Length: 182
Length: 187
Image (cartoon, rainbow over all chains, first blue to last red; front, top):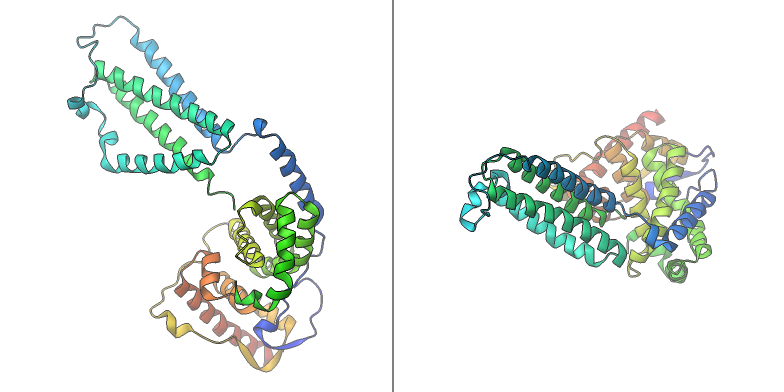
């Protein structure tokens, strides 16, 4: 197997050698990786978690999209129902995809897992993730409010769906970050 | 603790425990001792699963790096050797691209309960290793873990991410193929 000659004869398969040392010493490369890990661990403030870029990106996308939309909204077009907000009874104005029971159930389950995950994060990282998620939720809230004022606006509906998808992606990224250690 | 470790338990595990404790506190020299003690078995496992010396060395190396990072999660009540092997098997499976360990239909897994594979006529180690290497991936994985390294079906199945029945069936298949190939080789 490793180039060495096996002259031994065996009667049982469990008599085969379990110990087969590698041809080269693997320790130098392992030691180097350990040292890099140690240096990384000593700088928690500068450490970038795997889930942070995903969550940050999602929050940024939601903000930029919302900004573009608000820019469009500011053009003086007549708005017959301006000033109204989305009341409880008007839930049907929310796009069908977001009223789906499965989506709600998945999101609730994800939120529980993510909240547990947040508890085990170092405070600095937890604050960053929580801030990004809060930004996303604020954007979604603002879109919902705008949708309340303009329920038939297809662009707003699309924006709400994509922001909610971004939120789901971000929540999934945070949740999955906990199961990638091994 | 796995069957594979029982013979080594009294002498090695306690010694491992002290080294693990030191390694957990960041002592890389203690971890190097653990590496020296276990690298042969980890590499042997990787080599038999990958059939490629370079890939096996990479997998063994990655497994030890992952083990260092995951040491805080290691629970002392389980065997370090089994834990390390689990990481190594995971590493090999991750490096394999495409579908692996396909589930095979099993009607009654109990029919596959068999003792350790033995031969009436002694076989040369080299010949046996070559026959193992020629086995299909799923059958080979089960044979290496259960047959060579002595893991129970449940342990091997858990490491490979397959059902216990599938593991039994794969081992049964591996034994049949191995016997055929060895007989053909002998003739």
